[in-house]
Image (cartoon, rainbow, N blue to C red):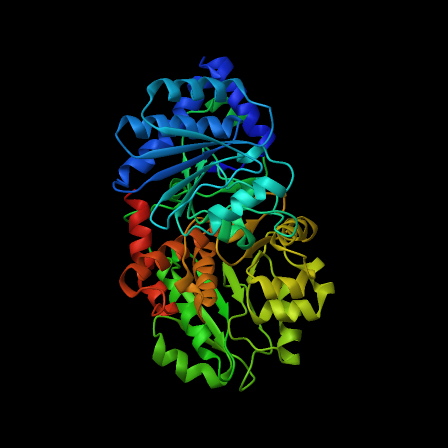
Length: 505
């Protein structure tokens, strides 16, 4: 699990590393910039002019080291030292001297009022202007330079964070300019702001480069934000014993489907069984009986008294886990049936789609949700449940507050799907792709979560593993299908490969 630390915590990590390793601050800068150099060198940008824009702080010092290392390998480098103020850090001055003594890169200074350098579309620009310590929007001369870089058409690589962005909150594009990077190379930790759609146009593709910060400090650092890794999920997966049987892997109940929406029930059912549930019963209206029996014979059926929609369950004693919502509809009788299920359930529920829509129309029921239940809204569904947010950052805070208030897990679906927990933590999922933005993908996730819960995974374990497996299966499908042609069934077809990939490391 990668911790997402604040700027202040990252500064403390740097200081602890320098004190305890021991290593000089300039040595740590050399180590970090060397990682960036290796990233660039691996991509062999031969034939390109590399233009490196350096501020006079430590982010600029990183840029100077990168320039020296590139020039050493005979890359064509132009370095622009941007004099915004008279303040200069010691490590910046040291590395400026080293670069000038090397004599292989062209070094220029830019001040307010100077003509800005020409940047060609075929050039490579390295942004080492301001880094993560920035605490106000870029205006005036720095903003003009950033706009000039953005309008050049060159490929832009930001060091640690795009200049003008903030690490711990969203970029303030109304009051300042922000570098629009194609790639961002972040040191040791991702920045919290990277996980929100408002930042996508500025970070581009981002990668985390390890720079050997003090492991004891990192282990002890307190945070409520995390990025899930494959190893975390692999460690959660249960190992099957040779002499086990279907009864060992739980009996799941899926309440889903209504007239015209039986496809959602079929998708969720298939995903549930593909995720390892021993037995599955699907509760459907009478109109769905033939559809489900034909489309998915592996499932048993419980048939509702109503022809076209869910109206209630008579007995749930036989089941180890229950999910409700895909294709359910929002009939009044369905609402009454959901209310009774919430009141009578002995264990956490998985609620999705129309179950969430019914909850948003009857918000007093939220307080009666079984503790540890899992809700899987997309942003619009969450808005109906919890209210409107000004931006994605505020919505994340509302999500965490919602989990704490109602003692539930909320899986807010989207890029970097976020999982909030009753104890106030928030886990971001790293995989998945835009091809999964199609009808039925959410129904598949509900099925995966149900299958894991039936096997005895905790709500947190099921949430972390389910979201990761769902995203990984989508990524495996996209490799064959591309984004545009990917459909929900493709995710189900790749669930087995996703499990194998995690199990085999």
